Amino acid sequence: MKILVTGAAGYIGGTFAFEALKKGYKVFGLDNFSNSTDFVPSILSRKFKKNWVFTELDLVHHKAETIEFFNQAKPDVVIHFAGLKAVGESEIQPIWYWENNLISSINLLKCMKATGVKKLVFSSSATVYGDAKQQPITETQPTKSLSSYGSTKIAIEQLIYDACKSKNMNAVCLRYFNPVGAHEENIIFESPLGEPNNLMPRIVRVGLGIDKKIKIFGHDYSTSDKTAERDYIHISDLVDGHFAGVQYLAKMSGCHSVNLGTGKPTSVLELINAFQQHNNIEIPFEFCNRRLGDVETCYANPTLAESLLGWRAKYGLDLMCKSAWGAVKKNGL
Ligand code: NAD
Ligand code: UD1
Image 1 (cartoon, rainbow, N blue to C red):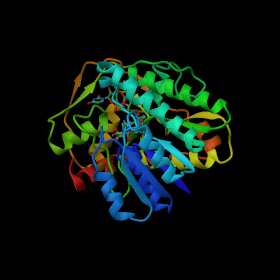
Image 2: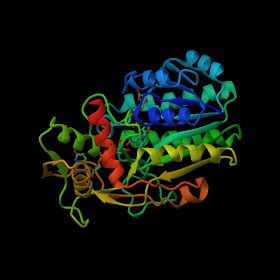
Image 3: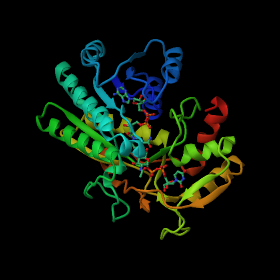
Image 4: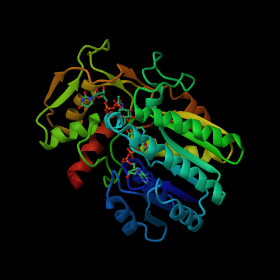
């Protein structure tokens, strides 16, 4: 099978590409390096000379070149990871987010149509549920945007859904909860350009001594330890969910949105404690005010993923914490 991966130099796209190559697939990756470097593509070039083809392309601006790449690749399926993903940044630069995320997706769909590629897996997010009242969250709950980033994910899902109505395309939109940790070989890990906002990379920075303390945003939630709860999912489980999505595409039609989460809520304090325990390292913290736009609890009901895709998360907080730390210790930030 031939797979085309957009955003292939990034955290999740790079990890997926690595695993796909290990499984023996031919992988065509593209990225514009707006939030990555050629670190991952060059590792993959060294390890998988024959089956890895990478090109630097911007899905917004390089339409002709993208069609050319598709014609060269003739992929059976596209996995669309490319996108801007920082919620705070999206509030400051909404038009940039809309242009990058939406136009790149429109161009990708046009390109798929022009070259006869009919199967798509899209990286969506639990952010599409906004501040869902019912927990755990099922896919039938309404979508609601709390940020420009969230608006782009809802809009792209709708775009893909409409494109699939023409019967020329089938798609799975995977709604990720909170991906953390590193791939088993500790080579590819979350290393965003600039300062990270997410909890795990922030904890890692404290472990490395870059920051003195982690700020815990909110100690007044109605959870067991008063800190906010999320559904952290190991990157390898998340990546496996994409292979399950690809298999599902072979037998379904239309467009389906599916949660990828563990179904287990973990509080901020629990994650920090797990990190300390499993890595034998102290992570000083302080309680601060809630972060604007944060929700109290957000975790998946993963039963649709199990029934449709035959997928279920396997890994726990121990591996999430050990691998996040192990990769950074091995490679640096
Ligand atoms: P990432 O930033 O590490 O990877 C995204 C990649 O896309 C980057 O390498 C970036 O350079 C590239 N890119 C962005 N715009 C592009 C364009 N116009 N043309 C070509 N390449 C472009 O992010 P990630 O964590 O790997 O996330 C991958 C996808 O998963 C994103 O769509 C993100 O919104 C979604 N997602 C991520 C999380 C998370 O917590 N990491 C959660 C939910 C959803
Ligand atoms: C955020 C985004 C979400 C996006 C996801 C992946 C918001 C509101 N949501 O999810 O849309 O899909 O990232 O990019 O931004 N925390 C601290 N201290 C920190 C960092 C985080 O206490 O230094 C807390 C947060 O308040 C939250 C939890 O840790 O309660 C998880 O935060 P984070 O990793 O940023 O993920 P989300 O907010 O769930």
